[in-house]
Image (cartoon, rainbow over all chains, first blue to last red; front, side, top):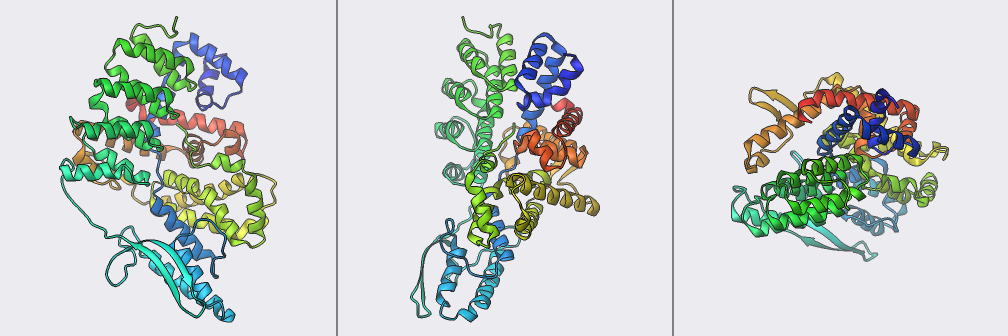
Length: 305
Length: 203
């Protein structure tokens, strides 16, 4: 296989798009050819740098888009039996049930309800938007149930929350406590932001929270952010232990790459065995190359004997 | 590395999708809503990643799914629904990008005497960072990435987006963009070469 052909095959090889036979030929060439090896390394670095740009979809944005779409395509109340229903759907159903005796008015009433909800929904969130608030100015968090009595009345049970806004320096204890609380929110956006603002110093609570996020958060963006914040603690034995564990178990190649980078900033003998074990099982060529280079720099063999 | 966490791949293999499509074609709006719910997160992510703007992504979401709603009766199961949907979504994304280029909107990242600044970025993060050099480096990298992606042709950018960020196979990308797997592979090669040249010293 010529170098030209191998260089052209590197992107599909990196993404696992080559047929097994071609992949073997490329790998054989990469073992022999340092120039093509550098090309492969360049591809892995590119993927690592670009991997951080992945957008997360905020939950509120998805909900807004769904609500907008619903308003755009529907002129009638929702039918029962659909997926998990949000407050708007429940309200629409209540409207439908309330006016069910007036079939000929159903469409216009539904349309008016949708218009009203669309208007209220359009005011929610984002620049210049506010969520609809009842008279006492408490926002509704969740509508729990809607029951029409069949005579024109309806009973709606809902939870209220009182939103507060707190401003302060990011290193203030109260702010740091809130950021730790934000770790447990459903929105990955909130978790990414809060991880990014935590200060990893001597505070073991913060350190443990970051390690917990690295080990358990389902969102790779949060894990990468936690990893970034743990950099100053790369020499801490407890941190290194978790890094080694996550390197062995994380399914995201960008996370594994960053862990290797972090571990090799403070080389120690204990890490050699970990890297040797991981390199044997690593199925991502970019990570594998990084591991091999790290072992070479540590004057260690790639295999275990 | 490529991500496909929200189930686009799974959805392609989901036998329930066909029955949802048939029910939606028959006028069942709940089925349509459930169908949308299977794919819409990955569609929104694609639009946000590709266009770099939440507002543009909202527009793409609305326009794409309205087109699906209006044209679902024409879907004949001669390709996967995922491919058919993504043909629509990629076309809407490319239209949006063309419109933006015509309007010559300012990019979110601007170069200033103090370096590159992302206007979409909050200020709080910078205040929190302990290392100003790191902040500057990250900003410069983000600016360079945007510039590098902006230098790609629209097709190269879409192929790269679908392969790198959405985790789609090149064969599927070819089907979506109405070309061959080989052409998609060549496009990906050109895209990565260009990106590496522009990002050079950051890699």
